[in-house]
Every structure is written in C-alpha cells, then in structure tokens.
Amino acid sequence: MRIASTQYHSTMNSALQTAAARLETTMQKMASGERMRVPSDDPIGSVRLARLAREEAALDQYRDNIGALRARLTQNETLLDGISRDMLAARDLLVWAADGGNTSDDVRAMAGSLRTLVEGIHFAANSRDQEGRYLFSGTASATETIVRDDAAAAGSRYAFAGNTSEQNVMVGNGVAQTANVSLDEIAALLNQLDRAAETLGTPGVNPNDPAVRGELVAALDGVDVGLASVLGKIAGLGGTQNILETLETNHANVSLSNKHAALDIGQLDYGDAAVKLNGYTAALQATQKAYAQVSKLSLFDVL
Image (cartoon, rainbow, N blue to C red; front, side, top):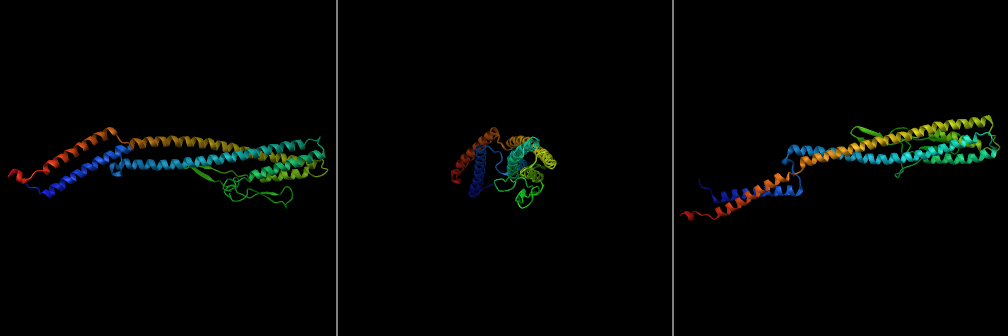
C-alpha cells in the first residue's frame, strides 16, 4: 500500500501535537500539584470536589455569622451588666431610704441619686450599635427602646416602644441563634423608680409615713423583679456564647476534614506523574527522531 507524503506528514504532525499536549498537561499538573485541571480528567472526583467546596463556603459563612453574633452578644452582655449594677445601686438606695432613722433632708438627697440612676438605666436601655440600630428593641431596631414623656406624671413617663420579636441568625445547617435581647420590663421599673424618686424628693417628706414606705416597698419589689429578669438574660447570653463556641469548634473540625478530603481527591501523585512524564518525553523524542529519519527518504533512494 502506498501512502502519500501529505497524508504521512499530516499523521505525524497530529501524533507530535498529541504527544506534546500530553507532555505539557503533565508538566502543568506537576507545577500546580493538582490532579485534575479540567472536570474531564476525573468526572467523579470533580463532583466530589465541587460538593466539598460548596460545603466549605457554607461553613465559612456560618463561622462569619458566629463571629459577628458573638461580638453582638458580648456587647449586649456588657450593657446588661451595667444596667444590673445600676439596679443594685438603686436597690441599696431604696433600702437605705426605708430606714426609719433618716430625716427629710436625707431622703431628698437620696432622691437625687435615684434620679441619676434612672437616667443611667434609661440611657443604657436605649443603646445603639455603630449603624444606629437600637439593640434592645426586638426586631423594631429603628425604634427607640424606651420612650420618655416629660409631660406625663411621675410613674407613667416611660413606655416600651419596641417589640419582643427575635432576630435569628443561622449559625449552622438548620441551626439558628437569637441575636437580640428585648427590655420590655424596664419601662415598668423606670416608672416605679421615678415615682419613688418623686416621692422622696417632696419637701418635708416623712420617711416613716405608711404611704411613703409603701411606695418604697413597691419600688424594691419592682427592682427585684427587674433585676431577676436582667440577670436571667445575662445568663442566657452566656449559655448562647458557650453554644456558639462549641459550634465554631465543630465547624472548624469539619472544615479541616473537608480540606484533607479535598487534598486526597485533588492532589497529584508525583510518582505516577513522573513516570508518565518520562514516558511522554521518550515517546515524543522517538516520534521526532523517526519523523526526521523517514522525512529524509525518497523513492529515488531505492531506484
């Protein structure tokens, strides 16, 4: 059978290009350390890597959410701790004011300190984040938490303007944690303390008057109820942060496992690659030499 020169050269060029392409692909894989440069290199392995990448992206988002949530919960806990300290200080003042040995001037001085504590609690309850959102207004974060009506009478000046709805943040697959704390009970406490301060600040007030003592007892009961509520919220925040720490550790462990799995699937076997590289190199060199020798032949050489 006779083969035309054009057909021969075309066949050899195609063979050389294929061998060179295989050699180049192997060298690129060895340079990058990746076993799969395109999905067709290993379709099943490529699907597994895609799934691992998708799961890793979700874990990164969950961990980012956990970091932001922990920062917010820490801020909430710090503010609530300050409110609880002001409540304790108010309670001490009320207990002191209930002492029958105080004079009218003594309790009037206490009234001034009590008003300062009321203002401090009101200010802390209306705390906002750096974006201007109220922290303790539930989902109504654009609304002031506790509003004050200066025209109203003592005991009815403060009102809760937010809501008690929860802001949930996804911190895992199907796992959500509440990001906010509502202080709806603070308005009633502020009204009780405000009324007690108004009573104690009345000129000539008699600390031993049954009506005055009844006002002080009611205020003390209100402080105890409010303090128990705030301390419960602080404990809840601590428990939530412990849960978040556990979740973050679990996410980190899963992420590490995914990275190891991705390495096992996608990492190049350099020993196998080196053998293939040597084979492709030898095949390319042999093809080039054979092509060079055959190209020199002519029919006139055998005439």
